[in-house]
Image (cartoon, rainbow, N blue to C red):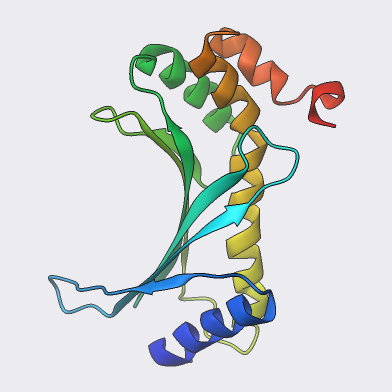
Length: 166
């Protein structure tokens, strides 16, 4: 599949799933083809009502960024410990924090080398929904660390407490 065909497949996925994503203007200093999409995704049973999702398609990969609507500014040390605990067993992607402004996000990137087939749109559904699910799973922990209700260790355990996740 060409780059344009992959971009069209992503856009067709959004349309099929009734997901509103804005196509952003993109440029690359090294003349690589890039297209970006951004939108708010509603969340059920999480600490936040929406998460912002940014998809970046370039010649080599698809990256998914899921941004939390809260800043860790003033709670950097506690949040760094929580994110370290959360990232320890993640198989795909990572949770990270911008130390300058406290921005929190989950990032997942996948090479396109093995996905040059007709299953691209089906594969992209996983690329889209799995990062949102992982980000949502850890949202309760992020919320209680920032609110000061729990330590990073307690917050990490809280993410796996079945009674509280219902």
